Every structure is written in C-alpha cells, then in structure tokens.
Image 1: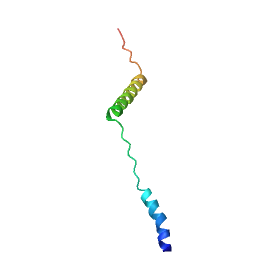
Image 2 (image 1 turned 135 degrees about the vertical axis):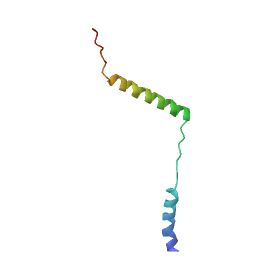
Image 3 (image 1 turned 90 degrees about the horizontal axis):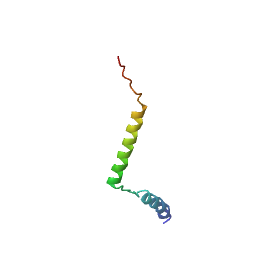
Image 4 (image 1 turned 120 degrees about the vertical axis):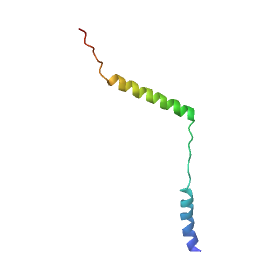
Length: 57
C-alpha cells in the first residue's frame, strides 16, 4: 500500500507533463504581417545602396 502512495505523485506529474497547447493564427493576418515585414526589409536594403551618378560629356 505504501508503494502506491509513492507512485501516485509520479503518475500525476507524468500526466500533467503531457499537456500540449496549440495556438492557431489566422492565415490572412499572418500573411499580411509577413508582407509588411518583407516590404520594410526591401525599403531598408534599397536605402542602403549608394546613388549612382552618370557622367555627362
């Protein structure tokens, strides 16, 4: 009987460790956010490039 009282807390701990939480994001909102981030990155990269000057004769 004493052995059961020792196993019970371990079993309860093992069962509680098996809980999974799933978070679902709306696909449209995630895609919109990704597009916004990509646009911002492209703007930063384009502003980092030096302006080219054409020589006139």
